[in-house]
Amino acid sequence: MTTIRQLAAEFGLTRSTLLYYDRIGLLRPDYRTSSGYRLYNAADRARLAAICRYRMAGLPLARIATLLDDDRRPRSAGSSR
Image 1 (cartoon, one colour):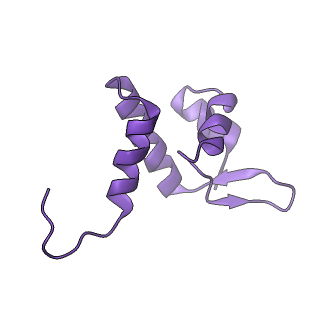
Image 2 (image 1 turned 90 degrees about the vertical axis):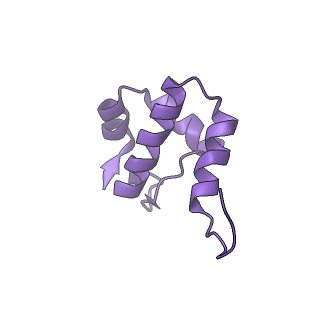
């Protein structure tokens, strides 16, 4: 598990940015301690890496959220993309 400060430093972001991503539902931490501290796992780190790639490509946060949430939804057998 990684703290918010560690994750922010790893990606060159501010703690405030990660707090904002949590507030808008873009990156919710996997776990919170009884004291309310956010802890992130490997899946959260991978999601943040994708967010950063999309941001570097110039996509707005709302579009990124849609793309990432679409990836989480199971696809039916007959659907195509």
